[in-house]
Image (tube, rainbow, N blue to C red; front, side, top):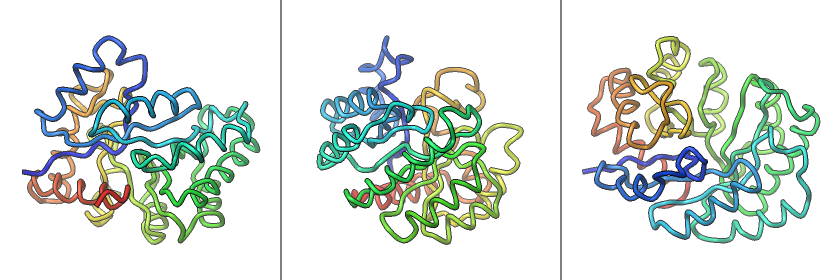
Length: 257
């Protein structure tokens, strides 16, 4: 039997402070075989690293989310570069642009996005891209700074099929999570229908974006079965096949094969 691979989680978040160990230790018996915990700030990069050291099935990504880039320094980049040499660190992320919150200034977000894409090339690691309300600028930077280099995933993909086509043509994976189960997720359902199965990976972004019927509650990898059901229905294939293929994809994405 295949196991589910959660390619994007934030188990170091305070939402898990009460039961983190118990929850993580229960994942395997519920069919979750691997998790990538993703850094979003310098602090969470450090707590992510600690989780990878504690749990054999937890891998890590180190990077700084666009809304956390205001006070970044080259010393921070050097720390990430050094720590990325650890074999449990499998990606640079999450990095990108976020114009929904629109802070810090867009020029600062772009500067550190480009710098962290360069860091990915220095380390040879794939990237985890965060892009919210910033479709054109994200794509333009990805084309000019990263296309054809270390590969990666567009996390929590939220744009139209046309944008999905651009990223798929460049060889990136698309991260699919709980949003797929939402009633208003027509665009994402069309993207999943359009994208080949070998370019899709499963993710939670937990504690955020829990799928229906848990929407609004704390998300965890345990709820990925609901995303599997949704993908299976759209693609017209068995759930077991969705799990097998997406796990294979995740291992390719993070070079764990």
